[in-house]
Structure formats: C-alpha cells, structure tokens
Image (cartoon, rainbow over all chains, first blue to last red; front, top):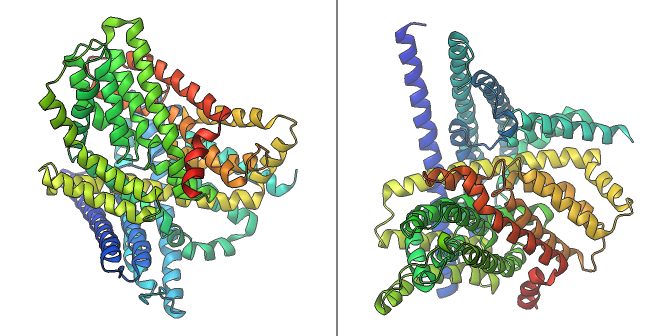
Length: 178
Length: 441
C-alpha cells in the first residue's frame, strides 16, 4: 500500500468519525429540545393550566430519533459493552480478529434493519399513520432514523477497516502479546 | 423435552459463547434472538416484525427517562456539585475519627440522588474526595475502598437507570420502584458509615480525624448544598408525591442541574458537548441492549425456556426462600462477569417467572418490587468484587499510589456490610415495601 493511499484512508476515516460525532451531537441537541419542551409543558401546565399539546408523543418521537442517532457513535467509539473477562489473556491479533467479527455482525445488523425499516417507512406512508394529537405522520420520524442506520453501517465499516489493519500489523510483526 | 425448548436452550448456549468471545452483549442478543426466531417461525414473520420492532422499542414513553437521567448525571459530574456536597459533608462529619471517609460516603449518597450511575458517582466523587483523604493521611485501602463502595450508592439511591430498566422488563410501576429503593438506600449509607467506624476503631491510624471547621465555614458549606437538596427534593419528591411522572421530573432535573452548572460557571459549551457525547455513548449502548433483549425475549418465550425454568424450580421441592437465595447467588456470580445493566436484561426475563410462581406471602405487585430491590443490590455487588469490579478499576486508576489489590481488600468490609443488608431485606421485605405502602395508601 502506497503512502498516498494510506493518507487517503486515514483522511476518510477521520471524516467518517467527525460525521458520526456531529450526528450524535445533533441527537443530543434533539434530546435537550425534548427536555426543554417537557419542562415548559410542566411549568405552563402548573401555572397557566395549559400543558404543551402533544408533549407525550413529541417525547416519544424525539427520544427515539435521538437514540437511533447515538448508535453510530456508540459503534465507532467501541462503547457497546462486552464481557472481556474470558479473553483478557488473548493476544492482540486474536482480539483484532474478534473485533472484526463483531464489526461484521454490526454491519449485517445495520443493513438488515435499514432494509426492513425502509419497508416500514413505505408502509407508514401507504397506510398513513399519524400521532394522536399533533397528527404528525409517523414515517417522517423514519427519515432521520434511516440516516442513523446508514451511518451505523459506515461506523461498522470503519471499525472493520481498523481491525483489519491491526490484524495485518500483527501478522507483519509476529503475534507478540502486548 | 420438545424440539422448541431444545432450540431455545441451544440458543442460550450460543449466546454465552458469543458473549465469551467478546462480541458486544447487545449484538450477541440480537444475533441469537434473530436467528432463533427465524429457525422457530420461519423468516417471514420476523422480517415483517423488524419493520417496526426497533422503533416501537425505542419510542416507549417510560423509557425516555433513561437518556434524561443519564444526561442529568453527566451534567452533574461537570456542574461542581460534587465539591459542594463533599465540603458540606466534611463540615458535618470530618472532625471525627474516620470522619472524612464518612463524609465521602454521605457525599456519594448526595451525588447519587441526582445521578443514576455507579461509575459516574465513583469517578466524580473520587476526583474530589481522594485528594482530601490522602491529605488527612487516610490509609490507601480505606480511602479507595470507601469510594469504590460509595459509588454503588449512585444506583441504589433514586434516580436509578437500572431500576427503570427492571421496572420496564417486569412491567412494574417505576414510581413504586423508586419509593421502594429509598429506605434500603438510606440503610446502605448507615451501614457504610458504621463499617468505617468499626474499621477506624480497630485500626485507629488508618483514618485520623480531620480539622474542625469554624462556625461560619460550617454554615456556609451547609448552605451551599441547598440547591442540590432542592433539585433532589423537587425531582424525586415530586415523583413520590405524584406531582409529576418520572419523565417530566427527569426533564426538570436536567434543566435545573444545567442551570446550576451554568450559574456556578462550571458548565460551558465544551462541557455540554462532552456531556452530550457521553450521554450518546451510554444511551446508545442501553437502547441497543434493550432491542437485543426484546429479540431474545421473543425467541426464548417462543421456545418456552422461561416457562420451563419456572416449572422446574416450582417442582424442585425446594423452599421458596432457598430458591430465592440460589437465584441471588447466581446473580452475584453473573455480576462478576458482566456489567449490571446487561445482567438485569439477560437474567431477569428468566428469573422473574421463576420467582413469580413462588409463594412468599405477598401479592404479585409487592413481590416484583421486593425482588427488584434485592436484584439491584446483588447486581451492584459485582461492581466491587473481582474479577471485573468496575468501581474498583475506576478508583484504582485515579489513586496512583494505591495498588489495585489494596483497593479490593479495602472494599471487603463494605462487601460484608452489603451481604448483611441483603440478609436483612430477605428477612424483612417490609424495609423495601414500607414507603410504597405508606405513600400509595
């Protein structure tokens, strides 16, 4: 692999990381918006007797969309918990191979869910389903969620590439346990 | 044994195998659940379920308190509350022998009242209290043991993320669960302080008394925890008294803690950014595990595994209390292998049906609450016991001069105190049930 190729790859991985992080932050801002809306609803309900209309369903949609937006960031930062106790003595190559396997599962999962939830969105458009009070069409919530799933796929590709690199490095230098 | 049950049990073996080779717990559950349902029912039903399953799971209203409490805890760790809490507790208790350690416990309890995570409580309070403890020449093992144990209070004292998850799995009322956790939480605080008292009585030089503070300092320090107490009173008190549901209460909590942090000048835009990203990590992790647990549940109940386990236990001829203790021991052992949340999500769907079949002389609702509090305490023990005592790791990483072994030794007296508390709760369920009975009439 040439030096130019390596920097290209490093640059794209860096870009993907930034993208995923910004997406997670956008989810966080959405969560804060839900917090402010709910706080306002309680305040206004207590003081003026008029809670925010549809605060329940806005919370449900907002938190769900935010939670999906967090998934790619979780993947790329390796925050999904695993039990490391059984493999604590394994060498770095074994760990890299297992990380690779986990990344493959994550990728397959994101693609499967992307495909199925796309179909789910089409269903919701066809048989138009809306929330009870504000009449928000449910399929609109699926648009950012599908973006999150696409980013989850991207994130698992990044972890996959990084694990492959580690595996290749391990093969080049021999498998010395660190 | 019928074929479906056999497939279900094989699924469990696969699950354990995948978890053992470091596949994230959420993905292990998703994979086994998805493949299992497909094997049992054919692909068509599962594929059609997947169109909506994840969204339906993520948009459960009761679950929305989880990211909010996580965010509240993450802002609280940066808002400077921990210093205020420790200074006040130290003004009250510091003059005694072992008092600075007791103050650390009290401050952990205070911090736990706005934070629902043990690790966050241990690391935040550790940052504040460890330097103080070493300044007063406390023995390294007592100092680190105290903080590792004190961190557990983060989850025992409401709000508690694990408790919310438990309530959702067994379909218990979250408010009642929060009420039930309160008295056992206070008992934990008392037991931990008594433990420190006994420790320093046996080894007087391990925890010398701190400085007595002037009257002015005393009042100043006490007044500064006013906002923390007010936030806790409003959020948890409001939930207890039925002023608002957990979700609005959590939202108000996030709002107030953030305002407090901004007013104190401790929380600025970069801090909020880190708090949000940490929230993203924890929330994403929890939600993905929840989705996996749901898929696994569909597979397991289709295979009839929980029912078979419940039947086997009910026909075993063992006394209900014996079965309960066996299950609690199983939870302690599991807690040595994985984090508390994954464990609750993995084990409770199997354990609860077993418990529900047994007669403990109380109604199903109360049984849910009592078992939940017991499971919560037991699960948390895993945080302070080897081999993966996460709290101990976190505190050890901070206290550079104290070897990890000393921390594990230092935490042992607190472990014994916890076992005593579990025994007390098993013998007297009323400890947990008293407050919910009183408040809900």
